[in-house]
Amino acid sequence: MNPLAMMMFLTSLAIGTTITLSSHHWLLAWIGLEINTLALLPIMTKTPHPRAIEAATKYFLTQATASALMLFSCLINAMQAGEWDINTPSNLMTNSLSIAIMMKLGLAPTHFWLPEVLQGISLVTGLILSTWQKIPPMILLFQISHNINLSLTVILGLTSVLIGGWGGIGQTQIRKIMAFSSIGHLGWIIIILKLNPQLSLFNFILYTIMTTAMFLSMIMLSATKMSQISTSWTKNPALTTTTMLVLLSLAGLPPLTGFPPKLLIIMELIKQNMFISATLIMLASLLTLFFYLRLTYIIALTLSPNTHNSTIWRTPTKPWLVFSIINTMALTLLPLTPAILLT
Image (tube, rainbow, N blue to C red):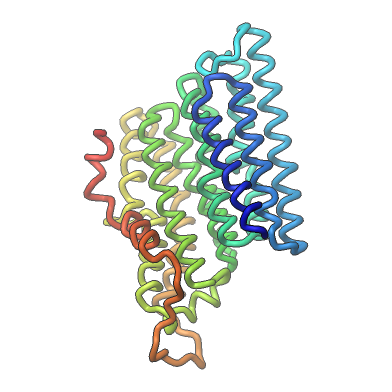
């Protein structure tokens, strides 16, 4: 793709996100989301492969459906309340609007588009879709969190964690595994949204950091399948080791960065006397833990035959400083958790 065109599309992504984040008017927020969607479509199809075209078509149809539902909900709210202000949604409109935004995020049960779309696009575009594209809808959810239906968030959160773990078990493609991982993590974020929005925001920030680190690792290794990861040890042992640790961090094992949000969410659910929800989400997360541990096993404890140790590690000229900072944050933020929550 022409660098000038790519710069224009990335600028449009930034502008759409900025419009949504800075708006207090539902129509402006909707316009920002549409700019985001339309800017990402050409980036998804920059390699004219049938899988990429199919992924872009599925993404467009899903986002258009969610946008139509969102606009319809905003119109109902404007008719009832006589204003478009984001902070004053009506009860009737909040449920349909929440479902529309959750469809944009890829939460269960409207998650079917995410694994297929992520599988059909490149790793760099998958990184944008899994992190940057989730920021505007998530911020809108935070803004209406005081009016959102608690039963809706708990049910969708539990369903997302369950499907995220269940769907990822039989996968061998890294991008599909990351898609189901995203669904599961968003379930953890949503289930606590009504009770403690600050904790949800903290969880979302850590999810973004860990997912970015994982995608950057895959880009550095040029790996999209499990079989390619198993041969990466001879190419770059240090990078393979940090990739394994990032996977364990995504699984939520202590003392890595992914552990504090899960611990704090379980503690908040128990504090709210939601013992059944806390038990169910912990049991459902065991499924996710299984496929993370399987990936870690493939990286650390298996070695493909007919490989030889390289005398020179392959270290291509890539942004190692950014990669090192993101990886460090994805592994070592546990001691800083109290300070982060107090700011």
